[in-house]
Length: 175
Image 1 (cartoon, rainbow, N blue to C red):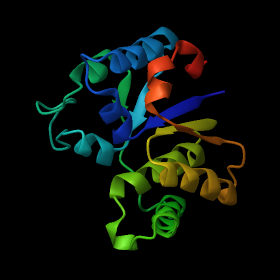
Image 2 (cartoon, rainbow, N blue to C red):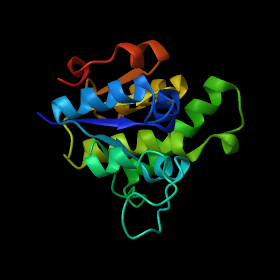
Image 3 (spheres, rainbow, N blue to C red):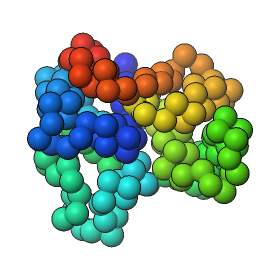
């Protein structure tokens, strides 16, 4: 069974950078289990990466070790021609807007990309299960609410990445 872990920008921001204990705990837990965090292109851009660069990471990314060591991986481009991916992303935008009482046009594209990537990985069979690590509760709830409606019941888990979560994380979280 293949479980894929997807992370959002907030996870890395909350870690505080490579010289912080939280970052090192996350790094150690992932390396001990051989697990990689997938990030959508949009998250990579939010982290300062240049999607036009020939190789990852680009010079501006503040977490180059994660990419070089392989525990942070930029996911394949989202296939917007896949009706499931585009539908789920539209639904996620509406869901998040309703949850936060904001206009749909103000919803960050990276938030909907998290849900779209989860749908794409499940739909293409590249994942049996997806764990979404995020600091964005509405995006996490959107994934857990919407993906089961598209046939992925019991195959998506949202984990809220609090400061406490990062301060106590171990390899057990990824086994």
